[in-house]
Amino acid sequence: MKTTTNLKFLFTICLVVLFVSCKDNKNNTQEENVAVPASTEAPEKQGQAFIEDDGSTPNVLQIAIGSPDHTTLVAAVQAAHLENSLVNAGPLMVFAPTNEAFDALPAGTVDDLLKPENEDALANILKYHVTPGNYSQDFLKKFKKLGQANGQDVAIVVEGDDVYVGGAKIIASIPAGNGIVHVVDKVILPAN
Picture (tube, rainbow, N blue to C red):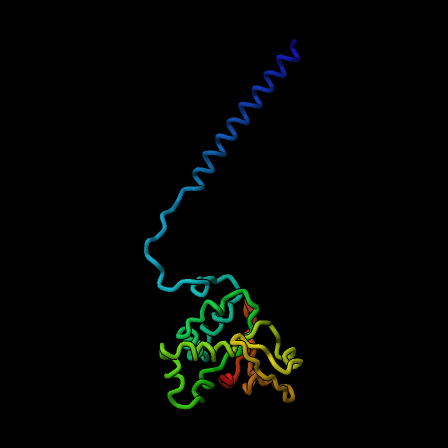
């Protein structure tokens, strides 16, 4: 009889402890799930391209934005509304013309392309500078052509240690969090 009483007492204690711990967890869960009202103001720019993250390796867009030699390229990307495309997980290989490369185009070309009515033509040219992959300059020497993001192929030519993509020489390569940026000395123009 004493054993039965002890078991009943022990069982009752266990139930009380279980009840109290469940009640404490319920209260903690309610406190943790307090809703914070959402802002009613819509952000001016939306998408991954506009998320600030100082802890990660910069993506291809952030590298271009941070380069004083690529301000024209960044302006073109913004005019074509391609920012979010350049921050996706990739991997992306971007052939990034310098400001000097854009300056070498016929006078008025860049200004004309930056007009809203030429957004599609500008996007086509910019997509011709992007391909899926993350290939070093040495690895690119194994290719004869690459399929670009605009659906066209671009020729790869190797002359000694130099690699040319669509006639543009790769002058530097910068690893990115979502691929690689190959800095080129010319704007690569698609056939159409």
